[in-house]
Image (tube, rainbow, N blue to C red):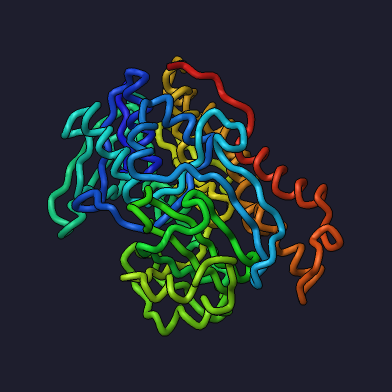
Length: 412
């Protein structure tokens, strides 16, 4: 069996590594001219890190990321609603990582080139279409730089891991239209900053309609550390406004972002100073898509954001893509026919990710902040009088159980 993967993002690269570990030949075709360290910070949860640890990548991740110790949920005014230990500090056998997205992708990319060979990732090749027959699938890739002569490849399976604007998804769902947007814009940045708290903690202040997210994304450098921040604010009416482009390189001005950042408070952090210190501020729409009735058509399937783009709530975008990769490659390794493997993968993963998409739309675990602010809009003296411990635990713990799910059988 030979597999072709469209897209060298986190999902596509992880899938290639897992295919290799199971003895399945594969090649990635990536639209970008080069795989660069773009983006800002993300969190990757233990249920996903466990799969990367099994691939022998834990040391590399420790070199570029931070093992998250604690997460605190706050109101917009900075009052604590809930705090919990994370990763190994919470009893998991592997950590949660707070990490620069581009550096995380680079760890995966370097591992693919080292293990599969330097030609395992073909850059500057954008998927333009495909045709299938009983024996396999023929995928067509165009030159992503100038649209010139491309490449045609033959395989038994095509995995479309090509993001929220997936060509594969659009081929199957031509009338789906643009991503769903509720008027929320995210501004993101990072700056070298004096170490906050223990240098391993993160905070989220405010609920779904407006929040500030803070966490370190690189190991300490003496007394400073690369600190990631995000401001999410609903500023548009989606009925009359179109979302901004979801480009990794679209920048926003300090004057645009600062008034919104000033709405939030995190104890011990000079939010305005951190935002001002950031060399660049990037703007993205907070968008997702409705869950699909199916991902797989014959020998072609969707993975990661191509299959289930979700709001960046609960740190599950990259984590769910990694779980997709594990489930799909396990199915390919044990199935008698590629079609059976893709069907088994879809049956296992589609309903679970659809539930995450729907839950993230109402706030995911961060709904505990919305509930506290709704019940006590002017603040509180004791959170227990507003939202009991058991109520808070039910919101946050229920989400964690839903997104991690039962452990799936390991084959390598």
